[in-house]
Length: 411
Image (cartoon, rainbow, N blue to C red; front, side, top):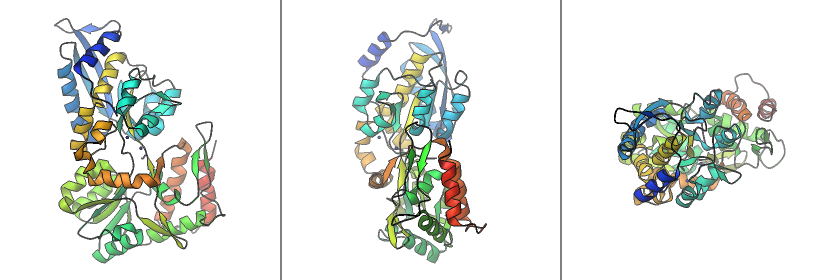
């Protein structure tokens, strides 16, 4: 999973200007009316299908006089879009959604070209989102959301605002109620929470591919073993449940889960179940050694990319611009609760009043852009999975941390 704030709705005059400036795709097919027939494939999150179909319809209406558009949607996880696309660039989607940590690899592999309308996008987007969509100052994708992070959801019927400041108190309240608190330890994206504010470090080396990591350090006020022991203590609580995002929502719906760590993509679904009792807050502190440590988070953005091998690059770019326009980012917030990357949309009263967005902003003080290489994910998930089960092998925690770091930093 994982991991980071967008596109000014262009006036009709600017749209026509862009249309005039761009070279028409070579050898276009024609429909019966004599205008161009354009076939485009779009990849997006499975949960976004209804939203995207509405956006496609408005795009087709807007450009009906210029072409016949056959837009095919396929669900594709944003978290591993890069791997699927690079497996067959020429056969991949024309337009696709992906997490910002993949932009460097996609650009380096030739899957993305620099965005032509970069100046307009920079002017209309949150600076953090522009940074997330750029490589060495060059914009390679269209910022879509600025909310790819996580925070705490809780049911106000069971917790006070003071309770949700501490994971110890959250677990105690849930245990007293015979209910569960959810977090996904199968995802290294979430597990970063426990290490991020401890002084232990992880990140990319200068080669942009391999990682450095000190999560196994035995020095400092907080050691890797301290974090591992804290995770074991959390896992030992009868109220703790290690479950995926999908399982978290199932628990919310059936009433077994009353708090959990997730992101804005679940805001609407949770609101539909908990109603006025829906609460959201920054991540709590947790007990690590003799300290209360503020849980950290990865942050990032969702982006829209245009395949450099698209047969219709100009129309693919226009569709990407349409998907990420101010109007459609507002629509995305209304239907999916996702935080806009467009400056004007993000500043709207509706967005500013969202509990989930407010919680994400509060957590942003304790977050960092997700910038890790591919070897990070599996070793962390393996380590955390063992902790979630109570360390069934009985192996030394230091030895397990050393193994995890060896995997993270492998070349």
